[in-house]
Image (cartoon, rainbow, N blue to C red; front, side):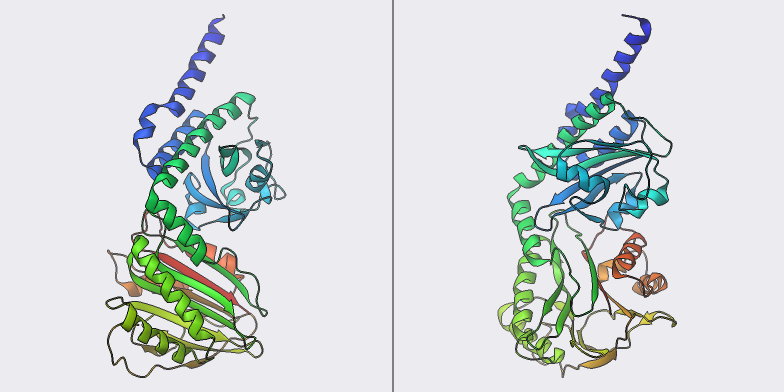
Length: 401
């Protein structure tokens, strides 16, 4: 063997060793993915490395871990299977190489704004089924080789092992099932409303007490709610599920949001003693340009109107749910929402940080909200929220006529 061949084999072995290092198995699932991506990026001399895991209920890939493209995870980016570069890999179960990236190749604008020129991606497989996608990118044109693909496949096998670690935990399995059942996987256009949402847990189990919901009403209108049950993790998520279901039931009996929240308050005090919940419930009629809305201790939404400064919605805030037997009369406000107007609802995890007062976070939020398409607004909001390791659950719901 020539000296050049020997050097090549030694380099190849070192690259493989970093991916197959048994020490990775001692890490928990989240840390394993982070460390694996850093090693993949180094081994393949790439600028970015990303793992997207499959949400089978939604038929979407969810950005879960990243190195060099952290914005994708911060924005809680989702991609339908079959669309774009990663979606194609998930649909076919085969590697894809793109030597010269163009707008036609990718769906996520972050890849283009980052300046990615070449991409290599492989499926993450478990028991022969696609459970995600692992891809790397470079800022300079690159001709990825079969050897590069083989190495990335090895890394994908390690990523699959991390996924299995996550689902082997009983609480994790229950938590993920609960999340899928409680958070709408997709928000279709309803009654001329454009909708988008994000959810980021502040707990390693992947669920918590924050939730959002959108549902049709017998009157032909639409119910929209965002709420926050005190606490974190599986226990809070279970309580949240009961409260969410009760609110839906009360919404069938009246079109007055204040009455819905009053009934929900009585239910919580009787059956969920000691649970503190904030909620914002809006009823959007099928016709007209106004909405009816009531707040139970929840942070005010942001409203963005074309041609006007973005601001917090001027809305009376009543007592949270579950605080006592005499919370006072709950109020419903009628708010104009003309065509093109956007309403952004959120939970406190988006704007509250230990090192700053909440008013600073709210002002920063108002500064970045525009009357744009809800998907674009959600992406912008999440990218400015500083979500490297959220300490509290975050739910965001945006709607526009």
